[in-house]
Image 1 (cartoon, rainbow, N blue to C red):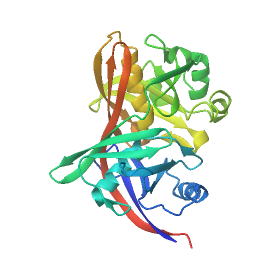
Image 2 (image 1 turned 45 degrees about the vertical axis):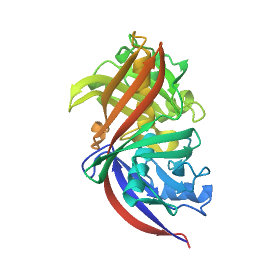
Image 3 (image 1 turned 60 degrees about the vertical axis):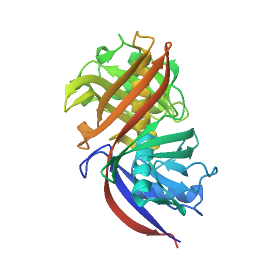
Length: 302
């Protein structure tokens, strides 16, 4: 069996920036075990496998794998896969037209809107498949142990560290400065004790900034899933923008932020996040960005 693949850099407008993604636009006939093996072979943060939709009203059924596990939902894989399918103009024998795609995933339906410059697709934005949910709080001392910063560098005025989700569970903590964020180093043994895979995908740190045209800088560590650090995590940042809206005092608002990630890895990424809050509740969250095509090829499984 020979399968075509494409790689794209997601959440960037330059090659070798953002978060690399491998997309298999026709994964029919692959088992879950084969998908996992291919994702491990590519060793990118995620690899996506596109299958025919279960409901013909939708664009595709998409499965997402890290090098070690399947995810119910993820951000940069959705944005990158939408970009690839839109540029191909075809998915499993059906034309991909218009500026709206809908993917079926384990976490639910993921609608995506495309951005074009002239006739060419350059970006995509997703709506999270689930509403914002808040989980348990985590002691600042535990966060400090997991990421190697001082306890007094964990900011708690806006919120204490906690688990939250818009389809994927992450631990979120604000740090007090850009320098604290830059020096953070994940400690896998502590993460395994306090954030096992069944509890959260990883630890997402952030701090408000005014640099490189962004409002927030963030970093995400998920070594248990085979991702020591991720250059751009759409599913974490779509939750983060929801968290920020949730903790704002206004009952009704639309909050938009440009989020930087990957700058400390040499893979700068720009993510455009927004959240809508009504009557004190966050009702919608969105994340999007630009993509750059990189590689194409064939994998031979025979």
